[in-house]
Length: 141
Image 1 (cartoon, rainbow, N blue to C red):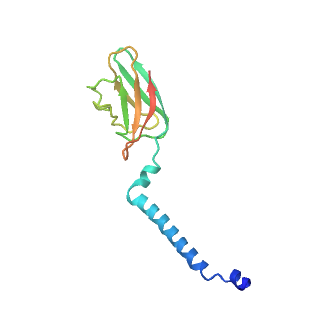
Image 2 (cartoon, rainbow, N blue to C red):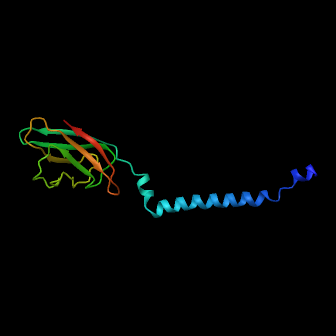
Image 3 (spheres, helix red, strand yellow):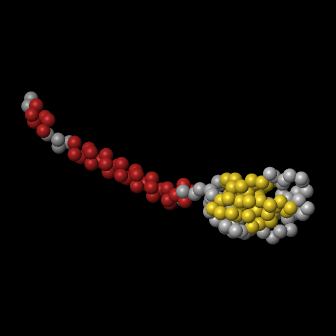
């Protein structure tokens, strides 16, 4: 047996490594293409906006004014008022279920009618339009 020939001959190594590399590249490409075809690529990068709000409560009218002070803008219908809100609100900016119909950006305000309680608790919650993600943006009370 010639040991020198055994260590220098590598004919079978090259095809095996080539097949392994081709399978790995195929699996990676299939995963990337499958992610975007199934629509998962949009949800991966979706995060809640970062925004600051100030609140002004008028206890005589039970109105809570939420003002967007800065940060990321929030699209209409992605912001929901949750808590001690009046379910039959007269304000056209907020639906009966608390959905805010106004796109909120710096300087924009929305009036939320609250229940007749002394210290209402209201949360402004962001809801994603593409998935079931939610996040509390601001809280009063």
